[in-house]
Structures are given as structure tokens and as C-alpha cells.
Image 1: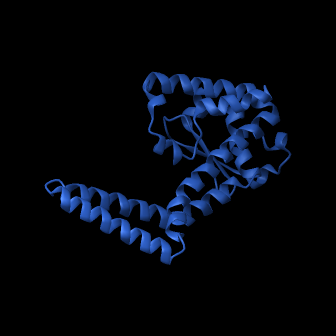
Image 2: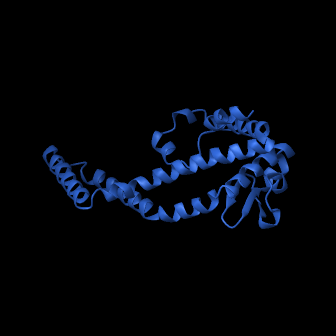
Length: 203
């Protein structure tokens, strides 16, 4: 695969994960990992498509940028987690409260939020937006890695693999289309239908 991509194969390590899941990934440090099930069950052409996709992450620098993005987003994830816990506590504490008390709490919270944003020039909003931006970059990286595999001649094999995964997903979770928009917004992987649609121009 590295020879086909025109890169030095000695720079890359292939790791095999003893897992029954059908998965592969590119990790920083020129590592391509694939599960034992993928090696065992995927036809050669589809395995080649998966490896070409993961190699595309490396040749485009996605592995390092993804690792750095994950670390830079740690404060944002902590902030979101704190907000989630605060929301849960507020829900529990206001269950028996009167309407007047609720209005006072909402007005006070709004005032504190507005004052904080005004004093910090809106920087906390940027902090909260980082996970969404990182997820959007991750989705674009996946589409670019698909394009890399297709340009190496694995477009049909990759499309077949994605179709099979989509069929498995639909059988396991028929209501996937009703997934919460928030979960999709924070997902680092585009949905399979989007990936298949973007692959069409290479087929």
C-alpha cells in the first residue's frame, strides 16, 4: 500500500488489535492499526481500501493534527462537563421551587453570563466552541482520507465496505436517522451516507 501511494513503507508500523470489532485507525507516530477481525474477514480489495484510507490520514498530517487538537480541546471538554453537572444540579434544586425563585435564578445566571462575556471579550464562547470546531475538522479529515483511497484506485472497494457497514448499522439501529443533532455536531466521523455521497465523483 505504501508503495502504491509512493511513500517509504519502512516509516510505518502496522499494529494488529486482538478485537472482534471491524475497525482500523491511524495514530500519531506513523502507526496504522487494524483489528484481527478486519484482517480475517475483509476481502483483500476492501482491506486495501481501509489501509489506503488510514494511510491517507498520515500523508495528509491528520494524525498529528488530531492528537494536538485532542489535547488543546481538553479545557473545553472540562468546561462542557462542568456545565453538564451544573445543569443537573440546578434541575434537582429547582424542582420544588416557586416560579418567582426560578425567574430570579434565570435572571441572575443571565446577568453573570453577560458580565463575564463582556469582561472577557467573549473568549468563553470560543472555549465552548472548540469541541465543535475540532469535530468539524475531524469530519473533513475523514472525507479527505476517503478521497486519498479513491485516488489510489480503491474507490469501489471503499464504497462497498461503507455500504456493508451502513447495512449493519441500519439492522442494529434502525432509528439512527433520528440521532440527536448535538451528537452529530460533536462527532469526528461523518455519517456513512455522506461519505458514500462524496465518493461518487471518484467512482
